[in-house]
Structure formats: C-alpha cells, structure tokens
Length: 318
Image 1 (tube, rainbow, N blue to C red):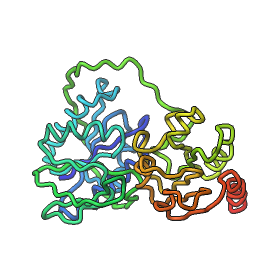
Image 2 (image 1 turned 45 degrees about the horizontal axis):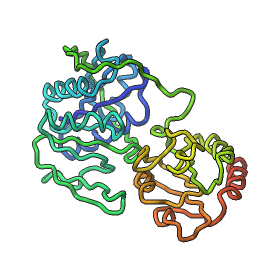
Image 3 (image 1 turned 90 degrees about the vertical axis):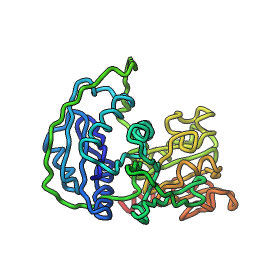
Image 4 (image 1 turned 180 degrees about the vertical axis):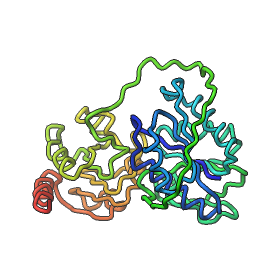
C-alpha cells in the first residue's frame, strides 16, 4: 500500500496535492498495489472525492480540533498511525516546508529509508532505486532504499497530473492527540499574493536591475503571465525586495515550470534553489555568466532594456 499525505488550504486542494496523488498512482502500478490518501483538516466530501480522479482508491479523512494548528511532532505521530493501520510500505509527501519537517520524524518512527527531493518514479523496484539530483543539480545519484518501508518527498511541478479515475472510498478516522509541548502563539498566512511554492511561472531578478526602484516591469511581467516574483540573495540583502522572495540554497528552493532570471549571474548558491525548474530563461549582459550554463534559453543584453520589449511581446500574444 502507498500512503500519500495530502495538504489542503482552507479546505481546498491545489495542484500540488493532485500531483502527489498522480505520482503515487503511477508508483502503485510499478509496485502492483493501491493508493491511500490521507487528509487532515476540515475538507468536504466532494473535495475529498477529487483525489479519486488521480488514482486514490481510499481516502482517510481526519478532522480533529487538536490538529487545526500544524505541529510536526503531532502530525508525524498521526501519519505514522495511519501508515501502520493501512500497512503502507511507501509514504509520499511534498518536498516543501511541511514535508521536509515531517519526513525525518516519520523515517525514525517507521524505521524507514528516506529519499528527499525526488522528481521521477523509481528506476527499479527490485532493488528500490530512486534517481535524484545532487550537488545543486550538477550530478545525479541513484539511491537504493533497502528498508521495508520507504519514504519519498516529491518536488513540486516535477511530475505533472495524470488522471486515473477511481471510485474512492472515504473513511472518517479519529485519533487521540497528546500535547507535544509546543505552544503556537500566532499563525500568519500570506494573502493577496501568489506564493512562490505555488507558482508555475516565476519572474526573478538580481543586481542587474541596478536598483529596487526598477522593479515595476518585473511585477508587470509576472502579472501578465500569472506568475510569482522572486529575487537573488544580494537583492534581498540590499533591501530592494522582501526576504520571502529570495530563492536559492539559503532561501526558498523552487521548481516552477518556467523560471526567468533577469540580471542574475547565477552563483552556485542561487542555482541550487532553482535548478529543478523545467525551463530556465536567462537575461544577462555577461555572455560568460554561469546562469547561461544552466539556462535552456539565453538572451545577452541589459535586463532593463529587454524587459519592456518582452512585456509588449506578451501583450501582443495575449
């Protein structure tokens, strides 16, 4: 059995959730087993049923007041209990802040091997071998998991959606939650802005923009394309942009379908956070900038000159 931990946002699922279930469904074909999706929170049955469209044959729904606030210790205990009840041999989570916080605890509780940040299905199931990027995307490693139970975290936007309609059974489940000793004083959610983790298109810029006052075209292009805005670390350090837009090894690690890098040289720390993007478009005046080695498409030129032309081109196409 494969257990998929699905996240919801105010009772609704996003593409990330369906991508996880799609991945689990295709993995289940390799392992000749079924998919159980676990949902924690207040989610209506009609929303839960959508998980069956992507291959979940059973959905375990837990709606407890004690679980309204996310706590890694408590959530790891609950997921462990469900995994043991269902006899799950593989557990799949998203490779985001939640998945990266829970998966090591699950690994310890289930005595399971863990591979984080996978992008594809296993290359072999006997032995269970997963290929993943290492050294900030400059190499690949084939990792063999020898434990009876396996845990994988999947990069967002790395697999895609695969419809595999199932008549999913919904099971309501109650758990006894003990106090972890952690007190959450306040939870704040970003509103009115596309989260970088959800964005399929990201418009990013670096010091080549010369000043934080020159960011209006970046925001305009992002709005036209329905994307998010990001920046390199020097830009956030200078205070030109907020720190929550900083992408890279020391910032947010993202994997959009399309990543624009305007005036970013491409230091290894930056590339480590964006190397899993499906397509990278680089715009830089320096033809020898490292970003061009990672880019699928490149334009040699001043980002401030090219941006208005690109905006007009997008407007004409739209």
